[in-house]
Length: 281
Image (cartoon, rainbow, N blue to C red; front, side, top):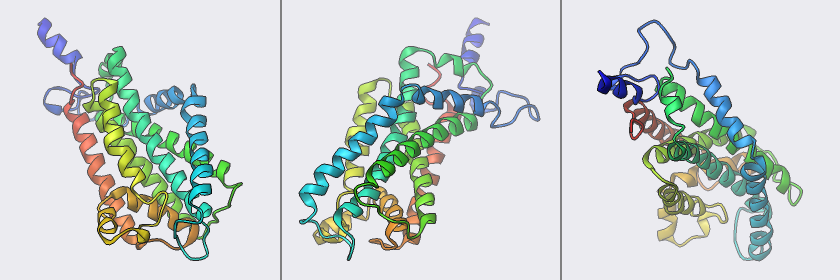
């Protein structure tokens, strides 16, 4: 009896043995309680906003000042677009992606280490509710930081708004992908150094090698081809299209790649949540 009670308490939120919903059919909704968990996650990063929002904005401004000064006459970008103007959308999107990932991954790992994850495991929250709350809060943080970077850097060189719909689409999809990927990393990692390894050896290189600081057309043929294998390149290139009306590849190709990436990463995250991967112990 005690073993059965312990197993039931250790199941992930709203999930019974074998991945079945813990609530009876017809009673409860997949997103029931997601709003409260979302509010808790937003409050978690907003209470330390100086660290989670203001600091990344300052970092992006430093990148702009340094790279804009050093590389302004050495990097070839789009015609009639100065390097500083070119750089701003890339820095905005880079900030969105990195902070969306950091929010969901750090929240889960911190909950595991401090032991307060058990309070969520005993609630009737479905895996959909977990996903919507964690990824939604990550998107809010990423977009807040991105907006802060845009406002802080627009003073140096206003980038313009040629096709704003692409800005919205790629910002939302990019934040959703990295929020989902952060959820996967947070479920996999058992301690902070594992999460840091995921960020330093996967997220950071893919972000910096995605065309944030340069146009891929300025690369040698081999690296030009390699850049097109990086999904982060399509996020940033499609996002930049919204500001200038020009891009390295078609925005529809970027949308197809980014949309497919979102479906894949979100499916993996939902599967891990549904099965309770590394949550039961």
